[in-house]
Length: 113
Length: 115
Figure 1: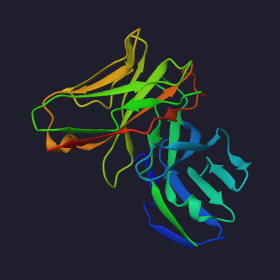
Figure 2 (figure 1 turned 135 degrees about the vertical axis):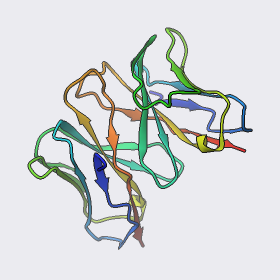
Figure 3 (figure 1 turned 90 degrees about the vertical axis):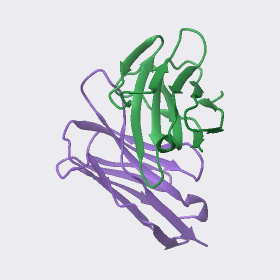
Figure 4 (figure 1 turned 90 degrees about the horizontal axis):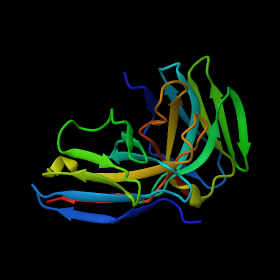
């Protein structure tokens, strides 16, 4: 079983739609949760960073963490063609010396104008 | 404030040659991470270094791959005797003090193609 599962998509939505992206994880040691956006042939860009369960909002983006069900989500409101990219969820453990991130495989999103 | 700088952006090698990938972390950052991304796959952790020290190399292949982060200069990921399966995008990330709430910032990557 993979530590992090993410639907690869592709997900195609019309401009203005609400987008829901999701990940599940298996290791309860994960305590830090991130969403990265990656445009084609570019490096991942940090979008959201959360520690606790609940919601965190930043502009059109909302990150949601449910530690009890090991489920994280990213919502994009009023989606724009410029949001078309691959979205990667990432998790980090709370213990140990390493600070490494464990990534999902990414979901490819296409927002149609 | 320059971000994480990687070079070269594209590197072409023939089978059996050596590949050297360079990474300069963000200003003020002393922790470097290398990740590999294969087509249709997510980012896979390879190694985590601080200045002059390897902290976690649990994702590094046992042979042909090595990494360093010297006191002066960029971090280097070295792949000896490359094979076609090494073709991938290699990303470097950096963070500050390395604490658990430190955020990782990525470079634009080096695309390695092995002929």
